[in-house]
Amino acid sequence: MCNARLPCFGLDIGGTLLKLVYFEPYSSATCQEQVGLQALREFIMSNVQYGADGTRDDVLEMKDVVIGGRKGNLHFIRFPTCQIGAFLEIAKSLNASVLNSKVCATGGGAFKFEHDFKEVLGVQLVKYDELECLIHGIHFINDHFHQECYYWTWGDQYSIAQATKVPYGFDSDPFPYLVVNIGSGVSIMAVYSAEKFDRISGTSLGGGTFLGLCCLMTGCTTFEEALSMAARGDSTKVDKLVKDIYGGDYNKFNLPGDTVASSFGKMCYPERQNEVNNEDIASATLIMITNNIGSIARMCAVNAKIERVVFVGNFLRTNEIAMKLLAYAMDYWSQGTMKALFLQHEGYFGAVGALLELMTSME
Image (tube, rainbow, N blue to C red; front, side):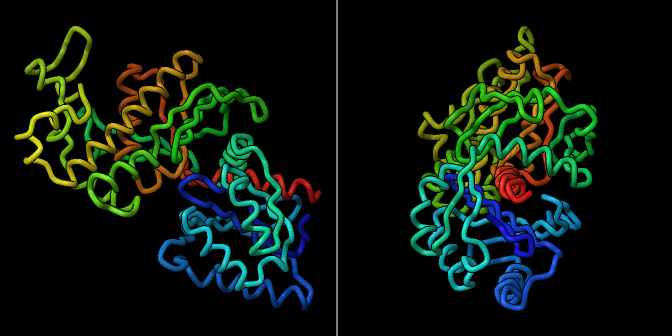
C-alpha cells in the first residue's frame, strides 16, 4: 500500500476538523521519487500555517519514531473540515497522489468525502473504525512521547488561575480507564486492554455545540475566537447559581453557593439580559457544555467502577478553562476517588491509529 521510502499519511476526518499525521521516514528515495518528496516536505516543513485555516502543531512533533520497522519523524496538521476542498487542491498542486495511491483514514468524513478524494486526487481512502484508531493511537503516542499524560492540581483553595500541570505515569498500569473523546459530539469508552474496549455512552452536546451556539449568539466565527471571548467573560451574570436560590451554600447536599443551579437561568429576566455581553454568554456556554460532559463522564465512571478518566479531543485544544473545570468537577464530586487525566496530543489519536493500520499492513 505504501512504499517504505515514501512519506505516509493517516487522516481523521471529523465533523469539525480534519486531522492529518504525516510520517517522514529517514530512508532515502529514488531520484524520481525525490522530486515529489522534496516539494511535499518543503511545503510542510516551511510553514506552520497553511492559508488562513491550516495549522501544523510543531510543538507536538515526534522525532526518531519507529513505525512498521521504519524510523522517521511524525508531524501533526489540522484543517477545518469545511475547508476540505482547499485542502484537496493544495494536495493536488503538490502532486501528492504520485507518492501514494492509497491513504488510511478514519472518522465520518472518510465515508462522506471518499468520492472527493478519488475525483480530485485519484487517491483511494482505506477506511478504519474511528474508535479502534483512537484507542490504538492513544497507546502508541503515550508509549513514545515524553510526559504525554498529565493532570491538573491546585492548592487548598480552588482557583483556575492557580492550577498547575503535573505529569502522570499513565503507562505503568493503565487499565481499566475511561476515554471521553470530545469532538463535535462526545463518545465515552471503557478500555479494559489494548484490544478490548466498549463504547458505553456519549452525548450530542460537545465542542460543535459550544462553537455553534457561540457563533449564533455572539457573532464569533472561529473556535479560537469563542474561547478567547469565554476567557474574558463572567458566566455568573448569565447562570443562576445555588446561592441565587438559597442565599448561600446548600449544605445538606454539599452544594457550594457558586455551583451552577441553572445554566442561562438569569436570562429569563429582561433586566438581566441587558447586563450581559457576548463574552459573558460565551463563558456561560463553555461552562454549560463542560459541566454536562463532566457529569455524564462521572456517572459512566461510577457505573463502570473505573477511577481514571482520560479526556481527549480537539475541544480541549488550548482550552485550559474546560480542562480545569473537568479536573475540579471529577475530583470534587468523587471526593478525590476519581482522577481526570489529559493528553498532550488531544485530537490526533485517531489519525495516528489510521497511520498505524497503514504501516502494519506494510510489514
